[in-house]
Amino acid sequence: MPTTTTRPRTTSSTDAIVLLKNDHREIKKLFADFQKAGDGAEKTKQRLVDKMIELLTVHTYIENEVMYPRVRELLPDLEDDILESYEEHHVADVLVMELANMKASDERFTAKATVLIENVTHHIDEEEEEWFPQVRDGLGRKALVEIGREMLAARKKAPRRPSQPSALKKTIDAVIA
Ligand SMILES: [Fe+2]
Ligand SMILES: [Fe+2]
Image (cartoon, rainbow, N blue to C red):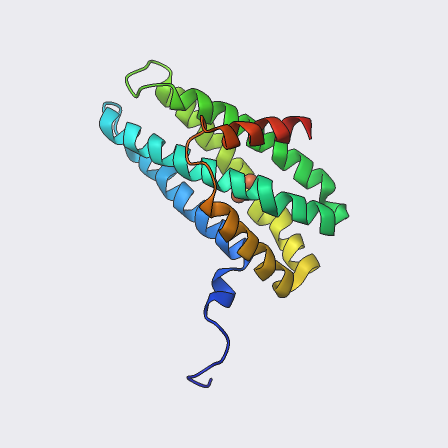
């Protein structure tokens, strides 16, 4: 391998699937930390849930805004997977909105966070195992890098809290689109 190359190094990091999988890894780490936290670790659990809410709000936004519509348009065979994924996002959005209004000391906080973790873990696994591989085969690297660039741009204006209007609008759009 030559040591110099004219290709920008960002090429690989803007691959849409690589970007989304990096997010997934970060989100799953928070889930694992939450599950390891003891029953009474309210401060830790609150901090972890606050971070989950932020990462999930941004991640869902860039998928709803860029990845899902692009895939739906370019690979019509994946329509059913995309529609199911929008519904799974909606369930997660509802749980996230409810959790954002709770405190770690609330009786149902840990239960609700656990249901969120179970739902999102299932959703991430379906993305990574069932339809992302078909997207990679169907679109190829060039299109994925292009979509990745669009997602990086969308990330800059993404809401970080579910109460922000653009996050709420996306939740509603996902349901009635
Ligand atoms: Fe998703
Ligand atoms: Fe995802």
